[in-house]
Structure formats: structure tokens, C-alpha cells
Image (cartoon, rainbow, N blue to C red; front, side, top):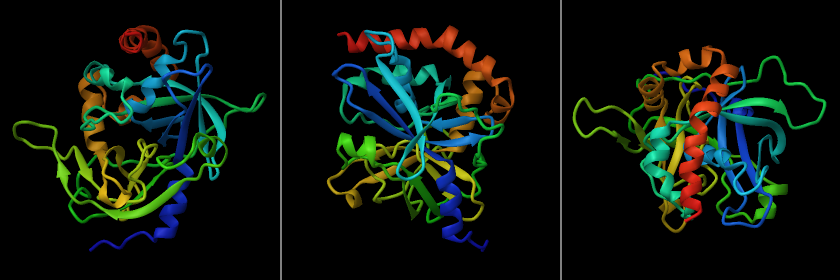
Length: 292
């Protein structure tokens, strides 16, 4: 048996790379304050989160310019740190799930439910971005994806908080759990390890989406919290994460590059291409549904 990393050490490391993605709307609207989590996965300033969190960045100018103001926050309580833009979001996810944007608690499998955000500037006027941003390493293999495997989960759950608490007094939460079940998104073999459940934990609530699942053996990021099958209390809920393996395979399928290669490229240019060529069509799909 491989020795486990001391929980306190892993917890401390994880808390440095987990962020809160927080959006407020300019006018009262169908979109309440939006909050989700993310994990910094590249020292060039790339945050991995869910597509169902990042889709709101596509609506920043819905109805009026600057309609939605989103920032990335860190620490406990969460303080504003960075402004970001979408670097990549799988169009296939929007095609399949856009109609859920009006629902309070949309259900999804987690397939293709990831996005990459790129840090563009600090929120503090006049401040400069650090040359390198603290990031976690990730594991796209499946050696540590087994039932009963111990993991640390960290995110910013907000299910039971008021809007004011989320705005002013919002704390990160982390807990140790075990993988319960492994799921595949494939209908036919070879079956792949695409998602896993973590049972009922304190983190099984809204806002936890986009949080990280870290191996207690390697300290690396293994999964991204994507959905919770909601019951009443948090211990009756089942928190689910998509594997980095699935994200790696998905981004390869859509862009021709695996995650590591994608992150090693010219991110400013990739972001410009996505936001110039792809994002407007995705924004249109979401806007059409909101305007119905």
C-alpha cells in the first residue's frame, strides 16, 4: 500500500489552488448571484471549472453591456483576486444542455461538463499579475480511480447560504471522502473511467461544482466536482465528479490536443480565437433560450 499524504498538508496545498467563481447581475433578473468553484491547473493562470459554471461568462453582455460581472475569488473568507475570460468550453456541452439554463437545479451526467478560464488581470486596479500563479498538478491516468480510494475534496459550497453570506462572508470547505462507484459515459466497450461518486458529504450542495478531488496518495487532481444527485440533507445526496481522464480525452476529441499540450500553447491567442470565433454562436444559443 502506498503511504497517504498527511491530510493537513494536502488540505493546505489544495486550499491554495481552489477558487470561487462569483457573478453578479447589473439588473434584477432571472439570474441570481451565481457562484461556483474552480481549480488552478496551470501556473500561466488557467482555471478548470464546469461548463455549467463558465457558461455565464457567455452572457456578460446579455440585454445590456456589462450585464454580468464575474470575478475569481480566493481564500477564506473569499476575496476578489482576478478577472478571467473563457479559454475553452466544449460547444457540444452547450448544444446538449443549453435548455437547462432556466432551471433552478438542472440535472446532468457530467459528460463534457468542464471549461477552462484564463486569468487576464488582477481585480485590484494598478496591481500586476504574478509571473507565475500557484497551480496544482493533475493526473489523467486511472491508476488511482478505484472504489474505496481515499481522496480530499475542496470547494466553496453555497447551497445553504444567503446571497449576502456568499457576497461577504464565504468560506472554503474541504473534507476527506472515498470513491464509491465508478461510472462510464460509453454505451459500448471499451468502458472508460469517466466519473465517480463520493457519497454524501458536506460538499454535496450547490456552489461546490468545479471544486477539486485530490488523491491522498499523490496529491494530484483526479476529478472535478460536477453534479450532485440531490436528496434532502447533504448525507442523503451523492456528489459526483468527472475524471481528469475524461476531460483529457474530451478536449483531445474536440481540439486535437490533450490537456497538457493545450495548456502549453499560446493561451492568449487560443482565448482570442475561442472568444472571436466560437463564443458568439454559443452566446446566441443561450440568449435564444433566455429570451423565450
